[in-house]
Amino acid sequence: MIELFIDHHLVILLFFIVSILYSSVGFGGGSSYLAILALTGIVFTQIRATALLCNIIVVTSNVYLFIKRKEIDWKKTIPLVLISIPLAFLGGKLKISQHLFFILLGFTLVFAAITMWISKKIISTDEHQTKTNSTKNVAFGGFIGFISGMVGIGGGIFLAPLLHLTNWDTPKKIAATASLFILVNSIAGLVGQYSNPDFSIEWNLTSILLITVLIGGQIGIRISNNCFTPIQLKKATAILIAFVGIRILMKYFF
Image 1: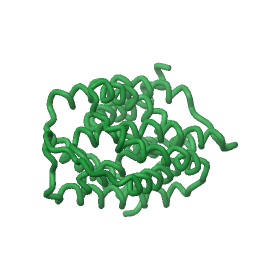
Image 2: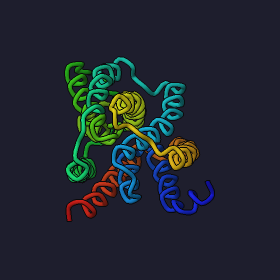
Image 3: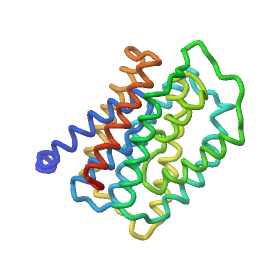
Image 4: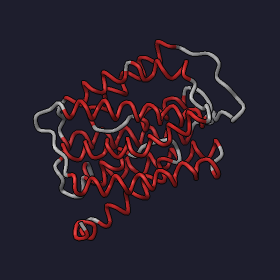
C-alpha cells in the first residue's frame, strides 16, 4: 500500500486539491478526476467507474448539508433529477471512444466557462426565481443525465452553467441542486456501468483516492460556507471549468 501511495503521490495530491475546489462550488469533480486518471494508464472503463465513485463520496456530505440548511427547492429540483436517473443508467451502459470523449468534453467545458464568465446577469442572494418550467427542467435533466452516464461524470459541470445562464435560482441554490444532481446521476451511471460485462475497478488505488476526496470534500464544503460570495461562486465555477477543458484539449486534440 505504501509503495502504491508513493507511485501515485501526484495523482493523490491532485485528487485532494480537486475535491476541495469542486466541493466548494457544489461539484463532485468527476471531469477533472477523469482527466487526471487518463495520465495514469489505467484502463478507460476503470477510470469512469473510479471518477463516479469519487463523485459520490464528495457530494454525499454536500447534499446532506444543503438539505439540512434547506437550500434545495424540491419543487424545482425533482423534475431535473427524476428523468435523469434512468437516462444516466442507460448512458452508463453505452460504450464510447476514449479519444472522442475527451475532445467533446474539452470543447464543451471551455464553451460553458466562457459563457458563464461573460454573462452579466448574476442573481443576488436575496433574489428568488419564482417561475418554473417543469417541461424544460425534465428536458435539461434528462439530456444531461444521459450524457453524464455515458462519459462517466455526475453532470453538475454541465447543469450548473445552464442554470446560471437561465437565472434558474440563486448561485448557492444552484450549487445545492447541482450537488444532488451529481449524486443521483453518479449512482445511476455507476450501476449502468456495473451491468456491463467488462466492468472492473482497481480497488487498491481507488480506495486511497476515495479516502483522499472524502477529506478534501469536507474541507471544500466548509470553505464554501465561510468564504464565498454568490459572485465568487459563479466566477470560481467558470475558472474551474475552463481549466479542465483546456487541460483536456491540450492532451487529446492539440
